[in-house]
Length: 405
Image (cartoon, rainbow, N blue to C red; front, side):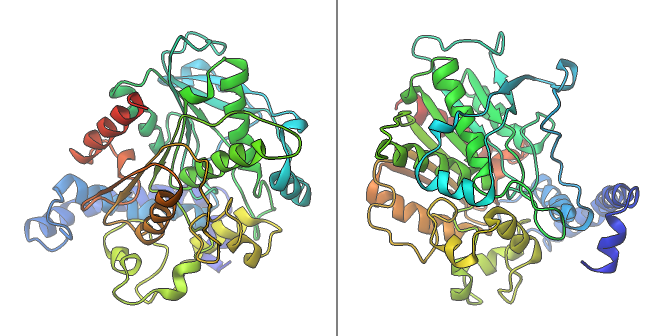
């Protein structure tokens, strides 16, 4: 940890640094406008001034948690009062019983000491109560937020909460967003490595099918960025557990949505990068940078991967389909056999584009996949209400797809 970062981890310097970043964002607006009018910072032909300003702001704040240690997460042991839940309902979700944790996930949980716990969730849409049972034929989305497994929250104040709102605006009646535990590692105390977040996602699924009575085929599991990775892991567990000797069968969800999924957290493809590789080229256009212009891994990416893997070795992580389904070190035969119909969204200008393309190619061999690569869009663009018309068009296509499952 460099000296500046050490200082920013001391209160109140971290908060002051965040205030400084906000001031920088505002101060840069006039200059960004002039550059836009001159055509200098309009790196893609379809980008409006709004999109350019959004990207400028995001580049200032995306990696702020690395500098300050402020990750935007919330205390998972405290209930959020109704007035602070904005347009959502706070819901406690019980941890899953031990007998529902089997196979490889059980082994990994024992290795790192992960346990299922009671977790917060937020209900978006038509929730009359936390025990609002499934209606006849009702479909619901189990939503998992992004943030690299190290930042963010399912709380409605988070930027990614615009994704549940997008589903609702185009015809979905309810969304349940799980506030799964975030991972940390050195130089912070190690906490919640894999499969902690998976156990939390599983708890959300069990809550829907066993407590609220949703049929598995009416549950659509979705996530963005790291949440997309987690959605893939949850569906994989539900598939694998059906074949386990315990006879456990929690059903298979009716569909899977992966928005800008983080398919290869351990970055096995980094060694293959050249100056012309999309992941390197898109470092100039996206706010998310996994590699710099020389193809060198940025520190935040390495930290997130280490925090997620926990005690698992880097080599083992590259061979785990739960952690890195887009890893180049995996045997791909039947990797996604038994998965439900899947809708994958990516931005053609995003940094993760290479691993997402690998993922969708693999999945198409084993299951039904719709792949929507949106021209000139950046990572997780559907989380930004100003990214129009692409955002609304994408949600409309996803909801139409859900309604036809």
